[in-house]
Image 1 (spheres, helix red, strand yellow):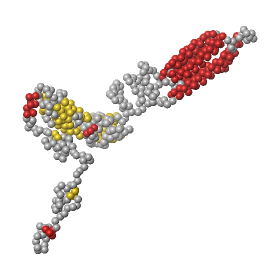
Image 2 (cartoon, helix red, strand yellow):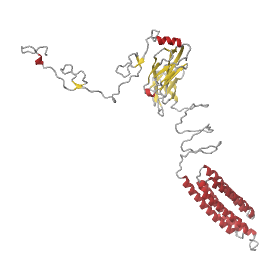
Image 3 (cartoon, one colour):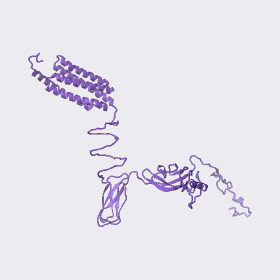
Image 4 (tube, helix red, strand yellow):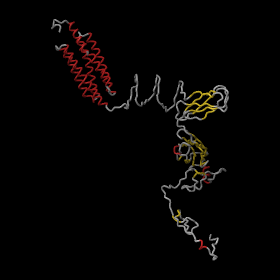
Length: 492
């Protein structure tokens, strides 16, 4: 330009070009466009991994190119070479994006064509006589077009992500993941070891399903441990919890100092408890206490008796085992019975409180005592009880089969239903085992026989089950056989 227009020097042209570029604020406009695109894009993990590095790289390259334009505008060939490299890299990334995200194929093709047009404009700049002003105007127009394309991207991504919620599951498979802040709106599952270097805080209830190992100290709240004082001349003091427990806690107290006096705890509730002493003391008495709550404990079951129908048995003879259990806060159907045998012999039929145990043939070669244990659980508490039954060898077993009467002086216990009105009444049973069944009145209608049910009536019907008011009685006058005009006492 300087050679064609002798009135302008190279320095003047450089000054004018520098001023015009500064007035157009290309760098600021590009930075704003890129920043807006980065902030507003809401891509899934795969698209984000492809687009974000490109946007960051584009921002970096444009900053570098802008600095080069301001400091080395005279060396236009070098500037265009660097810009060409940047465009080639963007073309490559656009092609990668096209292959990876099929839903963005149209956008990728449009963007690639735009970048090719931009590259063509840059190449034509080196071979034509276009002025710097015309080139910058074309660049500004191209940037405006790019801005419109980015807005189309936002619209397309918004349509794709419409209906997505924060409850979508995100699986992180990287071996090492480093983030400054992690916010989880709902639930999170960690497989493996979770190691927290800094402090961890929980605003709500935390449930641990396994043991907890603490290598440091435990600092409890004022509702879990504390001190209480029974003042002089008093016999009790009440501790009130700041926050009510869900269930009444277990409270343990210890007395301070050398006071050898009796003391106790009473009135333990979810809201507090009372420490009391039998006699007032002349000085204050200080106690330390600890309160721990056990959820779902309830009242444990009680095994009232464990009965076996035989104390010794051979093979093939079933032994009836019956555990009578009482539990005030658990129904019998909700109790769990577990039977075990030591040594492990025989087979078991049933899984309730009433089972049958049978020894198989040739299981023992000599008389063997077997410990029978039953464990009863209500879900929170488990109790157990055992008894011993002797398993007889074959020779002793044959003697028992021939003479089933017990050799000892103890009475033979025969379990069964002892209620004569039951369907399954067992006349040989000596102890009721709770197995009695009765007719179902709802399904078996009662037979009704109408008639006179008064035995003093002339027409008394012994088979009648319901009186129908038809009873007839003898005439007292007709019954008198005398002719003296008086009613005999027999008639009365």
